[in-house]
Amino acid sequence: MKNEYDVIVVGAGPAGSMAARCAAEQGVSVLMLEKDRDVGYPVRCGEAVTKRSVEKFIEPDDKWITAKISKFSFTSPDGNEVVIDFKSVQGYVLERRIFDYELAKNASKAGAEVVTRAYVNGLIRENGKTCGVKVEYRGEQKIIRSKIVIGADGTESRVGRWAGLKTHIDFRDMECCFQVTAANVSVNQDTLYFYFGKDVAPGGYFWVFPKGSDIANVGLGIDGMEGKKRSALSYLNSNLDRLYPQASILTQVAGGVPCSVTLEQISGEGIMLAGDAARQVNPLSGGGIASGMMGGSIAGRIAGEAIRKNNLKHIYSYDKEWHNERGKTHEIFNRLKEGIYGFTDNDFNKIMRKIKEVAPEKRTMNKLFMIALVNKPSLLIDVAKVIID
Image 1 (cartoon, rainbow, N blue to C red):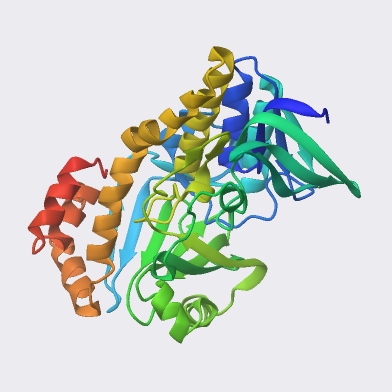
Image 2 (image 1 turned 135 degrees about the vertical axis):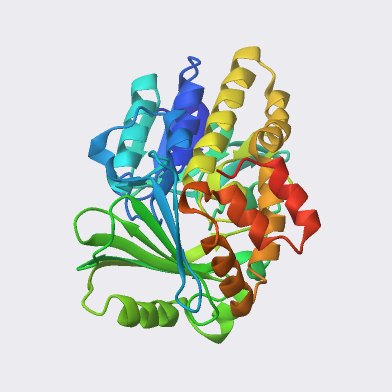
């Protein structure tokens, strides 16, 4: 590592790799630091993503696609299942270890320097401005200066706090999640499965995402308030015992997912945040891969432009550009989340019975939302503002 770069990116997840790549593509010097020994590990994600969001940034490759999704299955508390068939591939379940590796490799091809097992433990701050990072690497403490630091260090981001940005999130907006990758789980490989109900996943949902023959990611997220009463793991174990009693656990992971709107400020003097660190997760689904890649790409491009223009104030345009590109939509999703996750079991049961009356070929996500929110006209307007299906 050199002693100075134009841009330093902290974190080599999808947001960090996209930031590093998009900055490097403009010919500026970029260093991406990852605290773990391997890019893409450990995996803390359901690994599902929409096809169109991925294709904006990387050519689909079967080596990191474990399932191609063309159907959604929704099951209500009383056991009623509704399947929505999109008739074509709409999404993928990824192998994140390989996917993240490819994104980092693309950043490297663009000119970014990638270093793993580099633990960032502080920022260089001068007169209220971020001027680089302090990092422990191979037992040695280093100081590396930069014009811009991009924090893509995940939900627990310390970079933003060190830079003086307000990164607090109300625990009620932090979903408590637990997921296992399990064998002996027989599901259709073209379908994502979602289950709802107070005994299944209160204030959230339980999911089963296929990952190849008889293997699936099985997990859930529950409301932060509910998580104080009963653990996410307890709900997951109950669901597994009921639905997949023969499942063998291959991996397991727990953590919090910030299901809220983007932070009020995601840039400052010499600092930008991207991905989970900026709360760029879709608040309705809890998915953060696609939006993190989008946030990272915008941050990296603007950082590169700021360096080339010799105008570091340009990074302040990041907040507005993110808001216009995805932030406004996330605010709508957040309102929808607050409406939908407040449903009772009886509400979910009625919605599923109603959608089952619709002919299978006419079922769409838009139709599902319209039925679900028929008694919430203000939220129906929100649905009309975004493209659901």
